[in-house]
Length: 153
Image (cartoon, rainbow, N blue to C red; front, top):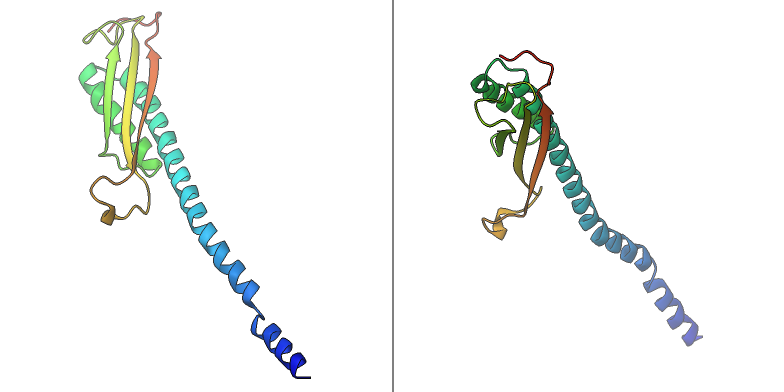
């Protein structure tokens, strides 16, 4: 009789421990998974914004009246595209090249190439890790042909 009471007590002491273990294991596994998903979505959004910024900047430069006005319009178009995707517009560089050379970008047959470069920090990266927080560099290139059958300006 004494043995039965001891075995019943041991079984009662273990009640609910599996639930606690599964809960803790799921929390320990889900937190890193959620962080990885948030990071992937952030990088994908910034990549889409960088690509859209290069397309918008190329189009804005090609329809501008002059190259100086085109550079201003291209920068503004890139900023708007980046802002739409949640990327800080101050953290990008814009490079515009022409196949016909600078000063001849708006000549028929010229190809305008725009390169936009951005760098984003991964979300939730603590500053305690130091100044070199994890980040990704992204760049996008877009070429716009300035039509052969356009009138020269």
